[in-house]
Image (cartoon, rainbow, N blue to C red):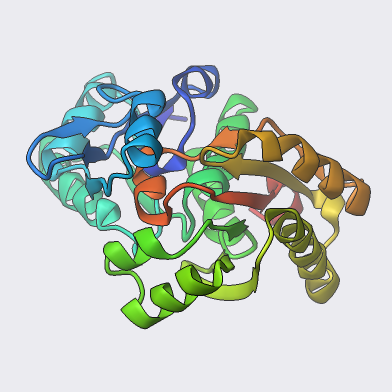
Length: 297
């Protein structure tokens, strides 16, 4: 059995420490504050610097996806070492990262014709993408084959969810993600939208005027997912993610544990620059993914 290396684009938002612990290599997105100079997330731009600009300077950062060259450069050392490649990406509906990786794959297959290079669309982003990667890494550590891990990811991404509340629609509107009227209505009414990322598509989950009620609604919608789907919470792992509202992590986790005690919570995650550039500050969410043992591989 060939060994393989796990890659992801930077939209998974795993810290450098987590990447090292799970032996996951990431190819970062680029972030710019002036539209001219682009910095690699985490490697050239810290989250503290990013959030200072986003909140204190009220900036509208721009993001740029990793290039074909970036992925080829990242994959090549592993291929030269005789390893196969598994690369998991943010949903194609939000970014062209996966297409860059697919093009890099086609180029590298000419140079390494015997290598297996699997490029997988996670249909997710940020924390739920991270949960899938963590399960993939666990499978690798437990001796599962590349094909088994790919099979898991293709099945599990359909059951993976992010349910999140954002502080407003200004940044989404500025980035062209929604219409101006929707953003204006939200800002006038001080509404905090609740959004669900499911099967790679964004769905409206509701709205709230207070963050406390919003957190309760996130937990309620998570519980409703299990009730409606008939899924067992004990089969899932979960993660709370936030941009700058770190004080909301503990109460969100406490409510989630009280409502769904069988659900295993892993470490919380700070949403990175790639996603926060589009959602803006004040974003908090719950991410869930199903364990690999629950699937036929």
